[in-house]
Length: 313
Image (tube, rainbow, N blue to C red; front, side, top):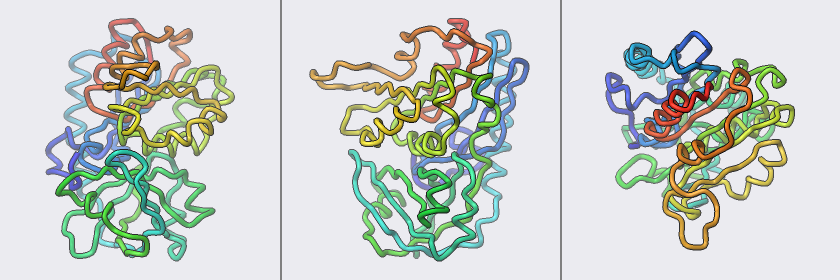
């Protein structure tokens, strides 16, 4: 992904569409939660409810693509005229090409309070740099309220605004737009006893808004099967490993998947969608929800597995 969004007419760069699927409905909604760069901006982020193979038709998918274009245009038209200046409070590498960035918004309580749901995002720009970056907020909403800060996971790409951001120092001032997006539609998989299985798929820096989701809490301990399939090229490119124990203690089973592991790796190898295909079948399709945030190909293949293996999400 590059750091500045391309023209809104290009749906593959939609900052984030949330697809809410039910037994008889495939409805793309403009619920963007983009990640740090354009590669991330191409990630579809989705909450899925039960969807039988008979509903995943080509006409549905075509309808989805058309509505995606309208959603992208709507996002591009959002008013970002009001920018808030705020200093960097932390910036440090956490994985290869990935940086943890914390921005102090304690002097701007209204901005901090506007982050209410995991999956929301904002735009960030550096003074005297024309193109802003879309950034998914990685910290949970409670963090902004209690600590007066937004945290992000930013992928540095050569020649991008993100690269400039990752080269800044603590105390440098950046500019933030208002918080955007409706966040993840978690209410679609509530209450926990009705949806005991939640599958979460993320690749690369797409883990950023997933962290916000997990640390916000969505009743994982009250569900019988909550799995996170998290894909990266290797362990050096896998962020948030220091949080895995905390996430597992909250009720989320972590399944790291490495596409190019070294010889010492004994876990899942290949791609996230392949690891999912090898996993135990879902026992209660009607009570299963899923969240996807990663490469477009991953999302498409997971949905194809839904149809080919008769796994209804």
